[in-house]
Amino acid sequence: MARPIFHPSDFSPASGPAFRKAMALAKGMRRPLLVVHVMSPVTLVTGDAYIAPNVWPMLEQSIELVARRGVTRLVKRARAAGVRASSLLLRGVTHEAIVRAARKHGAEMIVIGTHGRTGVKGMLLGSVASRVVSHAACPVMTVHGR
Image (cartoon, helix red, strand yellow):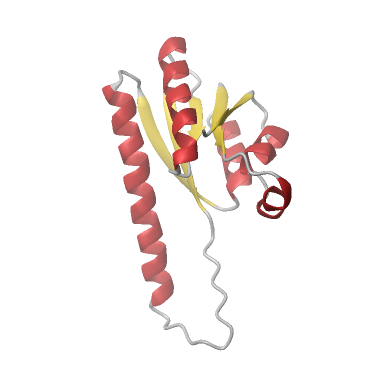
């Protein structure tokens, strides 16, 4: 079985150029494309406010629905371009889940977008792409999301 080109996406405009590059590589290398999205744990800080118990399951369902729609949309675009594509939804800490899944699925390479945050904003928010580069067992291509 051919090793897939792995494309983690957060569905932001910044991930678009990386998706196009991943499709081109998958098609050119005759590899399947695996579109990946990580659903991070929901954190809600409320202070003294009350949150009804049914809010959490509804919030989780909503996040999963948006994620499923996002990966389905990207897979359809890839297939329309003649690329063998499938999707994978993961849960957990984003960079850890990406690296673990890439290893498990024997990824040929990971093609991930970068937001280009710098300075304090980059330090505070961190960079999923840089963490993936640091921990992945396969080559990682970063694509700036102009």
